[in-house]
Length: 119
Image (cartoon, rainbow, N blue to C red; front, side, top):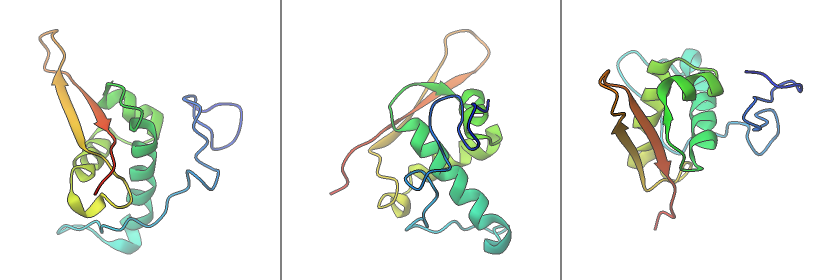
C-alpha cells in the first residue's frame, strides 16, 4: 500500500531515494525466456525491493512480500530463490533464505532472509 509520499510504501521504505534505488546486480539474471531489454530493470528493481524488505529477518508470507514490494507472488518467490544463488551474494549478501510451513493445514509457508557478511 502506498504511503503519503510518491515512491514510499507503507512499510516505511522509500524506494525512490538513492540508497534504495536498484543498482546493477553483480550476478546476472538468466534463463531461456530472459530478455535483458525487457526484463532487466524490472527484475533488478524487484530484487532490490525484496532484499530491502526481507533483510530485517522477519518471517513473511509470499502474499505479504508481494504486496509490500509491488510484485506478484511468483516473481517474489523467484527473487527469494535468486537470493540463495552465489552469483548475487556481492550485491545482496545473505547467509540463507529460510522457509517454514505454517501449521494451519493449507500448505502456506513463510520466508525470511538471514543477512550476514560474505567472506
